[in-house]
Image (cartoon, rainbow, N blue to C red):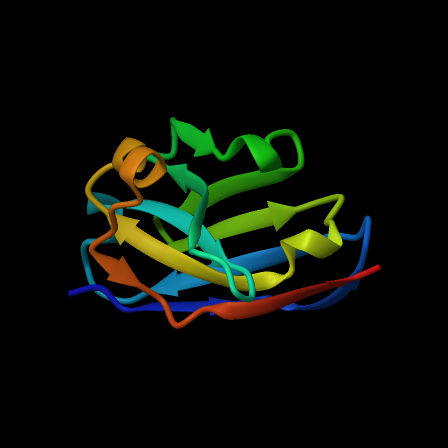
Length: 124
């Protein structure tokens, strides 16, 4: 069992930056690929980024490539999402996820565990 708790959300102006964190409980953090998803108002949940168990491989949605960076610290059992050049349309609840592979997260959105989410609001 893995419990995920996100933090770092908030209100930011367009073009600004935020860094999200997701702290995991349990002993097997390094056994999971980790990812971030988001759900904007009245929209379906969408994949944002994922990182492999070792941290050596990363995957991004095309819409965030070059602006967002996912990273992890297995010793701290934490995954991060650095978001730069934020846009108003990226206002959403951002969810942390843990699953078997980063590729599955990116391709089919598969995750075994989900956090409760953190609100990110980008003002224009």
